[in-house]
Image: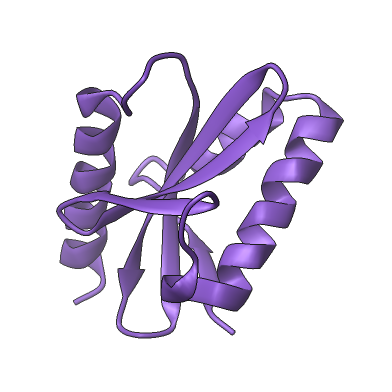
Length: 114
């Protein structure tokens, strides 16, 4: 079992929770179930549920008609998973800006928790 950590900005904002708060209850439930699955499977979780993007950033893939949701995350040591943020995917590829945002959060996390 992996420990799920919700990334918190220096302003004490939690981007994943802010994202979830904007969704309806059914979408929230579906995403939370996928997060639970990620907690159980960790690095063994693969497509269609998760995929590696780049620079240590992964995506949790949630399809809930008609939307495709993504929650980006990274691993710390062997048992921590840090969820950076979520978004609704609207194009074929994960937007570079979303990946860059996750990388920025990962670097910030690393600086704060050496």
